[in-house]
Length: 159
Image (cartoon, rainbow, N blue to C red):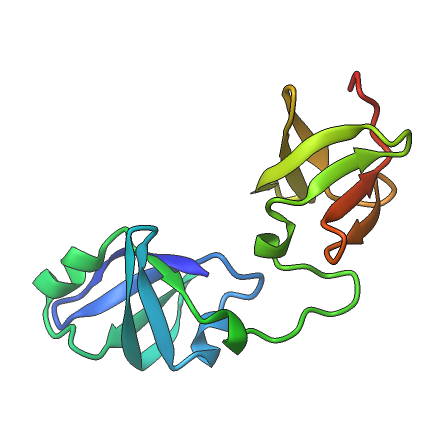
């Protein structure tokens, strides 16, 4: 949901770069999980607010600049069960990773291995016999069926 960009001031505050659609979305969660794939630790948010194009926050147990510096670069996550249900035709990126991508002719183009945010629209990174970048937008994406584990696309094999 974001990452710790830098310490902020001298009393343990951190500057946060959110990855959410809305800058203040992280403010809805009283506990953040900080870490990387190797491990996560929970921190209670004591105070947080929007500051320019980022957030600043004070976390429980982070009382000085040195402790805040030690957190720099860590990712911020919240529990999946804390997230709101996505609206119709909206998906969490995590739900798309690993889905098969099949074109209209029934050819499996590979699996979604990542998603790129380009500004105009998201782009699926699909790895199969070769890597493809497929815009995640209508009319290219015909159907997303997370239950079946498949995304159907209007995309040629030779694109």
